[in-house]
Length: 372
Image (tube, rainbow, N blue to C red; front, side, top):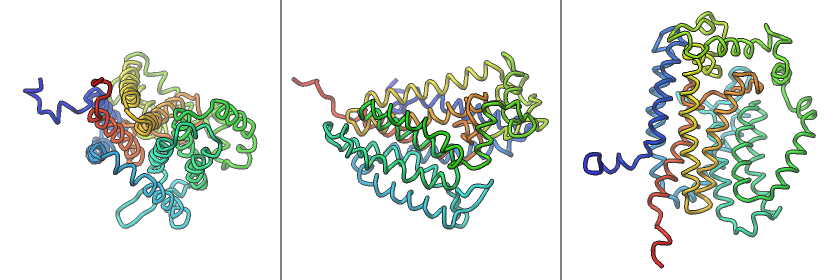
């Protein structure tokens, strides 16, 4: 095959790219149906964004390890400054202040912060001597890397993004080798703080989402409407679904946000269990590949980097699916590579690009143990 397929093409991680392309194409079909058969409404921009961001991912994959290490902390600080700028001059949309606009450019710094935190933590723990990792003094800078952006994101307010930052950072810290008792203590403290966080940290609409998640049938036409209609759409699809462009929940406007947060419900109604298995299977292959890249890494920085990016994609997938099935509160987390939206696509393609980068580092790493 090496004589037929050019080497640069053959070296690409096709075991991840094929399911990724499958999800993007399937997402375009679902988005076309969500717009009642109008390809130009959502699907066209979905494909264009992917092509542009895939090019960005390819560029990221070509970066060298010294270059990434050199720009890690400066990039983190720049994004943190952008988060601060959001609080001063950010644009308000949907009741939240999350975006910066400069001419035709509109960015959401909180999305960039998700991978930035992982890179910063991976670099930090990758450069620490092993003996210093379990020291509480080494914990303070890492906690600051996570908590500083979380504070600004919660002010926007954006609970989903703050949880994503905490999850990705927590995974990197756990895999870096911090003592298990620290995580147990943090978990107990977090559970104890839930009542205080509910009454004093959450906005009223966020409190409503939590109470609705616990009992959506208590307000089926109000706060529980989204979850109730989503369950109806998923359940009505059966095994094989109603068929392409035949979903009544989305076409008759019963299902809110059928092209973004609740796109899985739109898909399940029309493609049924078979469609759901395809989506879950594709994500499972991508995540398994990401973990294999982390395991094959030759140094701690690369391992933590790949594992953290894989964890971020997993967080998106897991929370969105739990949300649309009524097992988690509605927190505005879209389904990667299928939902319509530029910000989430950008974050997940950055993760893909970084994983491709570490994969290339692994391939080019000097082989050890071959010479005795």
